[in-house]
Length: 90
Image (cartoon, rainbow, N blue to C red):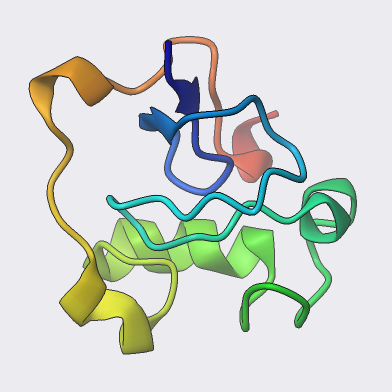
């Protein structure tokens, strides 16, 4: 069973977030419990905040522009969790 990435919502993580420090292959977000609990916190495991990373993913397909070379499209079995929402939709 795979769990949804907090940034992009695709089921790529091997453990249930938050705080697994797994890295999503689709958006390159590193699951960080500090940034999960405070989505506007910049720093820690990721340069942008979780909120900004979600905006970035919508704009150009990665949590941060520096990660573009490390991302890929989701596989069919990594569909977006239907219960997952962007922070601004919650």
